[in-house]
Amino acid sequence: MDSAEESLDPESWSELRELGHRMVDDMFDYLAGLRDRPVWQPMPDELRGRLRQPPPDEPEGAQRVYADFRTLVLPYVTGNAHPRFWGWVCGQGSGMAMLAEMLAGAVNSSVDGFDDAGTQVEAQVIEWCKTILGYRDEATGILLSGGSMANFVGLAVARNNCDAVAAKRSGLSGAPPLTVYASAETHSSVQKSVQLLGLGTEALRKIPVDERHRVRLPALAAAIETDRAAGRVPLCIVGNAGTVNTGAIDDLDGLADIAEREGVWFHVDGAFGACAAISATLRPRLAGLERADSLAFDLHKWMYFPYEAGCTLVRSDAEHRAAFQYDAPYMAPAERGLAAARNQQFTEYGPQLSRGFRALKIWMGLKEQGVDKFRRLIEQNVRQAAYLAELVTAAPDLELLAPVELNVVCLRYCGTGGLGDDQLNDINRELLSRLQESGTVVPSHTVLDGRFALRAAITNHRSRREDFELFVEEVRKVGAGLIAELRG
Image 1 (cartoon, one colour):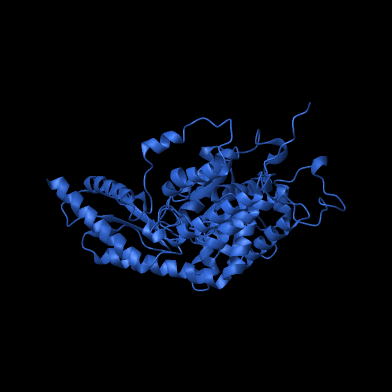
Image 2 (image 1 turned 90 degrees about the horizontal axis):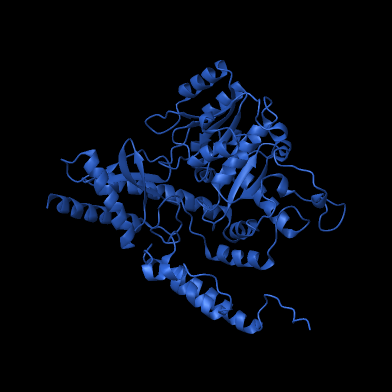
C-alpha cells in the first residue's frame, strides 16, 4: 500500500500564522531597540559547537527552530543594522524592506523574463535607477548580487564588444592580449573579473594615484600607448566613483575623454559612490558618470536596502544582450502565455537563469519613502563625514590620514608624539579590535601609505552626530590606555 503523499505545508496554518506574527513583532522590537544592543559581539565557543552538528533526520518543529534562531543567530549577526556600524561599506535595511523580503519569499518568483509582475517590477526599478542617477535613457540594466557581479557583467559586455576578438564564439585562444586599466585604488572585484573573464591577472594595469587617491591621467595615457606599441589591445578603462579605501572619485570626465579618444570601453565602479548622484548638490562631484559605457553600483550600500541588491547599467540593449544571449528551445519566448515575449528577458542580460525577486524591496522602499528622502539621507551622511573629520582634526592625539571626498573617513590614534609608524600601526590594530569587541562602535580598517587606518564608511541612515562624538571619545580613551600599557 502506498504511503500518504506529503508536502512542506504545516499541519496547522493557524499555529504557523501565530509564530509568524511573533517573528514580525520580535524583529520590529529588535530594530527599534538597536541602540540598546552591542553593535557586534563574538559568539561563545559553546554556541559555535552547536552550529557544527549534523543535519537532523527527524523534524524539530517550527517553535524550536525559531528558538534556535533567537539563541544562536540573532545576538551574533554582523551588526550592520546598528547606528554605530561604519565598517566596510554596508547598508542597514529598513522595516518595509524587511517585510518586502518576506513577501518576495512567499510568492517565490524566479524573475528571469516571464510575463509576470516580478519582471515588470524589476524593469521599473531599472528605469528608476537610470532616472535618479542621471544615466542614459537608452540604457538597459539588471539587478545582481552586488558590486562584484555588477563589475563582472560590465567587463563581460566590454570584452564581447571588442572587435579584436570573438570571445563569446571562439574564446581568447589566438587573440591578441587584451588589457584593462584601473587605478591602484580600484576594488579587488575588478581583478577577480579580469581573471574570471580569462584575461589573466597580467592584463590588469594598476595605474598610480595622486595625493587625493585619484588615478593619474597622464600615467594612464602613457600605459595605453605603451601597450599598443607592444601589440596589446586596450579593452577597458575602469573609473572609480568612490574608492573603497578613501571614497576618492576619479576624474570621470577625463577618463571618458581618454576612452573616447582611444576607442575603448569606459566602465565605472560606483559601488557606493554612484548613489550620491541622486543628489543635485553632490552630483557635480561625479561629473562624467553619465558618459560611462557601463556602470556598476549597489543599492544595498548607500541606498540602505537589505542584501542583495547590486545593479549594472549598460549603454545599449544590443551590446548588453549580445554578451549573454543564447538559443535554447526550452527557453524560447512564446507568442502567448506565461513565456510570451512581452518583457525584458533578464536571463539575456547576465549570467544567472534562476533569479530571486530582488526588485520588490527596492520598489516598495522607494514608493514608501520617496526619492527625496534618500537624497536627504545621503547628503546627511556626507555632512556627518565632514563633522567626523572636524572632530578628528580638532583632537591633538588623532590624525586624519586621507582627504574626505565623500563619506569615508580614515584616521588613526597617534598619541602626543614620540612614536613611529610601526608602533602606531600596532597600537591602532589593537585599538580596532578592542573597539569592535566592546560592542560600542564598529569601524573597519585599511592601510594608506604604510599607515594602519581606522576607516569609517558612513552609509548608515540611523547614525546621529552624537554617535560620531562617542566614536572619537572611545578612540581617544582606548588609545590612551594602550599608550599607558606600552609605557608600563
